Image (cartoon, rainbow, N blue to C red):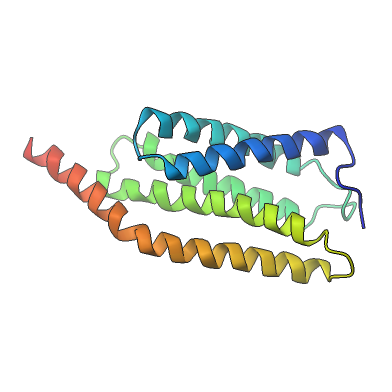
Amino acid sequence: MYGFVNSNLGWFHLATALLAMLAGAFALAANKGTVQHKRAGYVYVFAMVLICGSALGIYNLTGRFGVFHIMAIVSSLTLVLGMAPLFLRNLPRKYKAVHVWFMYYSVLGLYAAFASELSVRIPDKPFFAMVGIATATIFGLGTAFILKKERIWTKYFEQKLYCQQSA
């Protein structure tokens, strides 16, 4: 098994991941659209850009480009797709709920990576099986939560839309 952290880049990756985990959790828990939510969200996005960038430079696990590099690219895409609705001015407000979906999945991906990293540290367990179990568990629980909250988000964006149209 490889060491916990093998380089300065690895430490940087770990530190920014911990920052993103805290900021992401706060942004998800905060009331949407508040100053606190926005600040935590921007800290999360900045930290995730650093995480994904540093992940692309870490090769000590396999020595070559691999599945974790691909996941860093996928994570970058969920981040871009999560932020895009906020910056597209002509996008109807009801479609801004896409922001919530992609940002929740971005944070879930971060927590799945963390759970995977912890699970592969269990001695004498198959590496990719542990990654799969950890990822499936986090995404399964997270998706159940997201589907439960979907009605609340839809009402929020419809009410905001309704308020704007009636004003």
